[in-house]
Length: 323
View 1 (cartoon, rainbow, N blue to C red):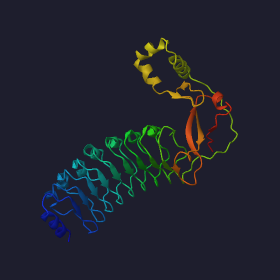
View 2: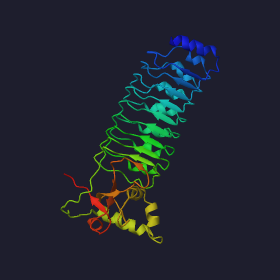
View 3: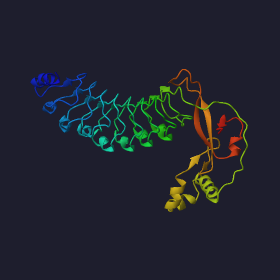
View 4: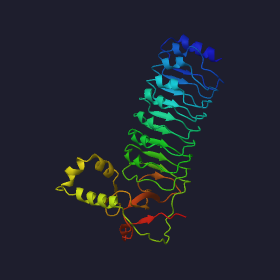
């Protein structure tokens, strides 16, 4: 039956634009697809495919490929030759790995659907999909996402629900075009600062987000290392335009490397290096965006430079209680 459908498409000549072979119980891709160089859309979903022929890479004008609901265990490397591909559907397979080489030829991709697979890891090379706007990774086994993903400046929708995420990279704040972020049903305890994002929808229900419950705590004595004391002094001096340290630091590569790890206190704004208090502040974002119905306040990770700042009244910052 599939061969007859393909034969019919071939009769349409090399200008055939779309072929659908879904739900045919195919175990291999029919021969002859490579003879349709004008093909723009190809659907092979709902079959029993576990691999693709090399010839498929000859479809240089293909813009949309649907391989959903098959039995692929990895993303086929032949896809990297589809240089015009814009939409790729791989949902409902058994994919556990993605080769970094895949991303070399998919620069035009704007939609990637990997829902309902078995991914535990995303390669950092995913940043090469620089035109990606919509990424779907729901129902996988991801324990983390690489910070390199956050360099996808055109991404507007990121779906990560039903995974095993514990944290979200701080760098997500750089994704200025992100409008929808789905983090439901993970293991996230606290969210990074996302004030600079222009989110319109945020979903994060069924996560163990920290509760706003004050608990008494024992204040530990702060003992700063000489390195920390010097670094804090330099940070304070660098805020002065006439400081001679500006020139001295630039000439010392080792010092530049150390000082590049600077953090800023959310209370006093002063810089520090390694000694800090991990806290949270609770942000009400209901008035700014559409959000999960059962979430009222979001805990956002915040760093303070000292107990002096922590004990400052009126800042609305809570320390994290470790059981």
